[in-house]
Amino acid sequence: MARTLYANNPWICGLCRKPVQEADLTADHIVPVSLGGSNELSNLQISHAKCNYSRGNRTIEEFQDSNTDNSGWLLSLSAS
Ligand SMILES: [Zn+2]
Image (cartoon, rainbow, N blue to C red; front, side, top):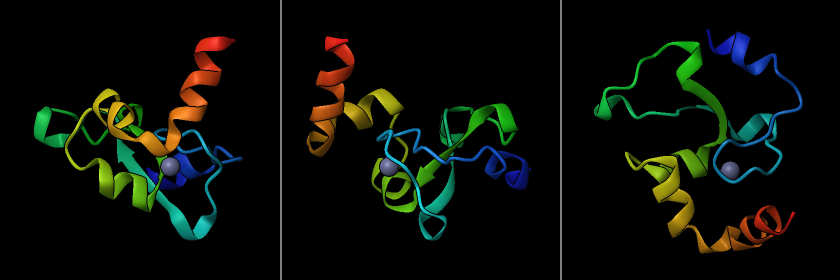
């Protein structure tokens, strides 16, 4: 399952949208298991280990709102 996910090269972190190197590669649950998310491939995305860890059980929106290090890409997305 994870192998199929990881076949989608290049790897872009689903949380911070930056490229992911193989050493940092993890599968992140889009909807956390604790919130009823499944282990299906459709609920998994590539992420950095540190993004996955720092996100915890928050939703992606909550993670991005709190992740001030990445305010630059959020601004660039809203400007385009
Ligand atoms: Zn990341």
